[in-house]
Image (tube, rainbow, N blue to C red):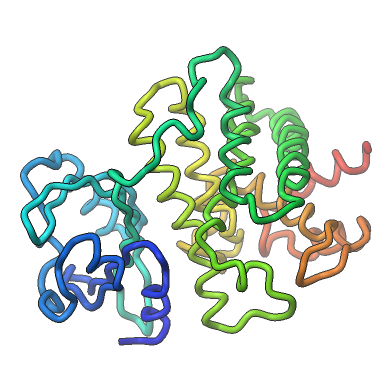
Amino acid sequence: MNETLHAFLALTDAVIITDERHHIMDVNAAYEQITGFERQHILGARASILKTQFTNSSTYSGMHDALNRKQGWSGVFINKKNTGQLWHSSITITPYQVEGKWYYIGVFRELEHLPEGIYLAEERRSGIQGVLLKVLAISCEIRDPAIEEHLTRVQQLTRQLIYAHNSRLSLGLDHEHMQSIVNASILHDIGKSGVPEGILYKPGALTVYERQIVEMHPLIGVDILEKINSELNDSFFKNEMSIARNIIFHHHEKWDGTGYPQQLQGAEIPLEARIVSVVDVFDALTSRRPYKETWQREQALAYLMEQKDKSFDPEIITSFLAIIDQQ
């Protein structure tokens, strides 16, 4: 199998790789452990070997529709193990093209093993959404001692940018929607909790293999979010979770279509992801990281201008420069 695809099997979560016709090409050890199916016995079989009648048919229809359009999909299945035991799996499936051929990368976790009550003990208290999302974000990135300051700065800049951008272009976004973007922005990198620390904080350049692992973090982040959302099942967080998914999954897409994980281009990238992308890069550049020194503000702004129409939405860059000039 192609080395690019093989790298995904190093994830600690269960991973299944299929061809375009959904025949199993490979699985990792976590998949074998959770499902009870041994790798050598299922290679070439249909991925539906886990399927049961208990998953709603609309779930499968939605999945097939998305994958046929070569779009990523996340959801929850009631699957069966090799023993016949039923189990709930939260899975994110991403189409991946290598050398002109399409493959599907499925990353999933067993919901029965999700700890309960860690983040959501007071979810019904008025105005608590933002606090809970912050706790969740910090918990997922607890290995970084400076993470709370970074997340706070990202959230503050996101608030300034989304309101300024909405006003400048008369987008007509209501206060509730913009506040949901502000609340959800703090979750943008929760998927990095699944990236090995030795890679995440490595001083110096990453190898090709290490870069592939880092670029899995949007998929891991969506998987974490979907698990929480499926357990919560509460309209109180519905809007935040939908917006958070867009931010987590797409904040590394680029305006010219060269980003990841789906190579979306231009307005295909959700507005909230385009907003957070600019803010996150600016704060990362102007902060010290293990692999880089702090950039001066003027140097970071020059980079944003250089990447206008390439990495970033040019209109958002214009709005961002306007709010920075006012500081």
